[in-house]
Image (cartoon, rainbow, N blue to C red):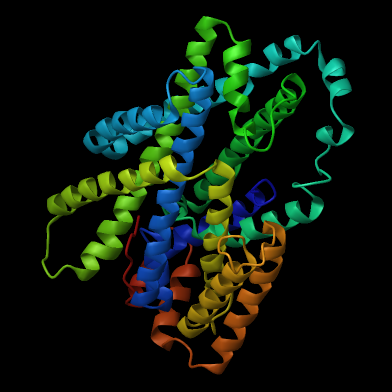
Length: 419
């Protein structure tokens, strides 16, 4: 979904860094108003809840398959949650940094370790290819991953990725604009490279285990680990799988607690708490956030089902982000209207309710993306614009390079995060 979106990170990095915000909730509040900041923050928390749940669900499913069902996925999910909560709440961002460093190496291990064993078990690449239809080795498939589907999810990914709530922190962490661009773009291309290993493993699984169907194919990775790896490497693989998700879970937990503390608690609390009290609130809220993710992991039928839900609602807000940056006339009324129209299109055309039309994902995207942009543009033109002083400050931040903050101070503009 994000393979062809990654080059755009070169352009997006400086946008986040120059705005000098802490969370993406700050972006919507400063550009459109406090109510939009709250609305976005609700979406961001849903995103974190869903992603935490999906990550736990995927890992639990894989390890359950490794154990042949001896350890159920629910038990694995709860164990992983208790483990990472213990060091996360105590260690904070410092522990997140260390785990991120370690898990990077583990991801490389588990992304490619299976391939030589699978090729050996299948009698080599030529034998593998003889067992599968030709389209299994094509970028485009005749069903599911069709060219239209690929185009639409790439478009949706480009629209929606800008509002993934952790990206403001990623973009804002660079000491310079060059650091933002190079670190985020080329670091993410490393992620895209390892997904080639995952895709190849999926193709090998289709050849080695032809009995897998659409209902149980998410077990493929775990089945291959259990059947192909010797004992020592099997243990290493399970450790790598757990290590690879711990850092992501930690980052989402910290990001979600920042949204709660900064964009909810500070806004609605009448008391003026110091930083120690805010940290305590962040820790407590992070536990509730992760608990919600666990509930989703235990009830959602599959990872794919959850991913399709997540990609919809991020795109709804992504429309508002892109137009906010590119078009001064974009306003809060246009965004409200766009959010309503895109949500309505998705509900009416999707398979989520009995009255839905049951459209597949690509056709839903083909409807709500243009409908959302057109609605926001038309309504923004028909309603009054945002206050000029607010817009002047927003675009002054956006057009002032990192290192030239003195220009903003000369104009009397304050910065949420000067860096």
